[in-house]
Length: 253
Image 1 (cartoon, helix red, strand yellow):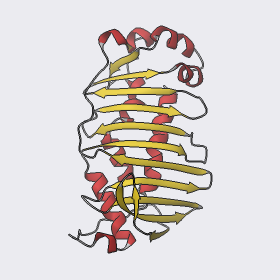
Image 2: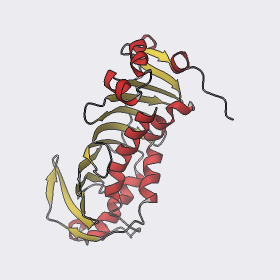
Image 3: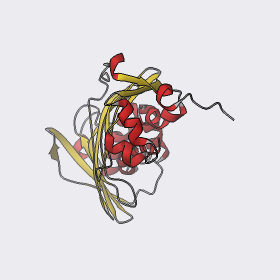
Image 4: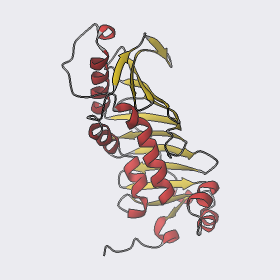
């Protein structure tokens, strides 16, 4: 489903575009975090994010440059478990997502079917009638959802972009974000301002990442580090098998 691929890619980009603020790995100090230089704060925040076993990611806004505005709320872990939703901007629809082990469930709404699958989408939506589409994670037609719901995919994107042009990195005054004391570090490059708000306590995870300028106005919030992804899955009566709706997966050529 092309629309799910677009949503998944945009959600990942909303976070990764900000995380390129960091480069390299530095030694860790035990105290005085708030007094560290901006680069060391950014490095430690990135390292903490890469070390996480699970997290909740909430992204919203517009990245500009042709990317679709969206809202995403996903809990995900390194084992590929996931639960949450992605909503595209402009009334283009939303998708609820659950992945547990080797099985994935997706529930696109009527607007998603109409806008993202213009040929036959409305018919698919009518057949599902508010139920989830269920299939194996190995089904190529569900691959975009599977990739988006794996923390390892996200971690790889962060690692791959760590060597990007860093621009000018500066540290701001301590501020509170969602009740958490943070130090903001900001990169200004290519007409954009990218800021990571880093928790001054604990393992120094990023609490919020923002990107502004050149048509972009987006934010990504992180929380629930190393906590289990919700394990509830849709009941059988609320699901339709993907092969019953779309046919069996074509054999590889």
